Image 1 (cartoon, rainbow, N blue to C red):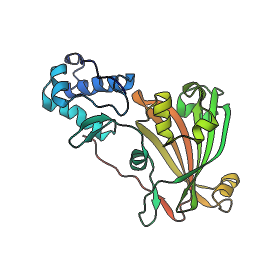
Image 2: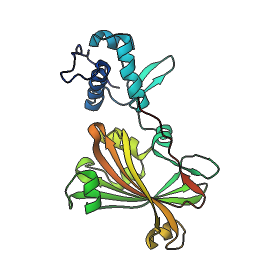
Image 3: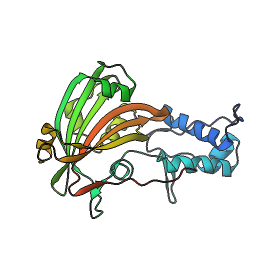
Image 4: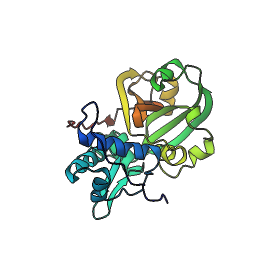
Length: 254
């Protein structure tokens, strides 16, 4: 279990005129990113944090509100505020956008198809901001919903970030892939950038999804980002939309 957080230093006004609550948010983010506030650990009370930082409760609360909206921390009624962990609920709510056409939204069954070491190709290198040809871990999964194969995933991971990751460790993870990143490698995925387009299904993927080659599918390219918008995973998902849809909920930022 992580120990208590050391006291925060009083917050000074930002030289560039950043609102004070944003400076508070940045300080809290640094503590979480550094591991001083580990996943699952409780933050001090808002009163304690505000006193430690020398700011008002209102200012502190605005900073925590933003971190909550971004799923960096989670408030638990009557218990306090905790650094968020990547569990199944968070995966389903924040990162898995596929549901049946009637609105049924559930956790997929994931089958590992391949786990290989290779080299990062041009497309993945651009997405991950690394050099083409750098060592990579390339993983393919099939995701099924209601017993039907719906998604083919191809993940490209920079090997330098995931030293010691083996097929056994990946296959036997107790929770989600992002939970594995967080607990084993200290990498917290905080958001993702996605691009989607309709394409004709490639022959190899068509076999995995039990489709005819050339059948219409949705291809989603996702770059997963950790703190500081650092890319940590490039994923290409091919979705059979015959009975399922990609659903995204938009919200206006403050």
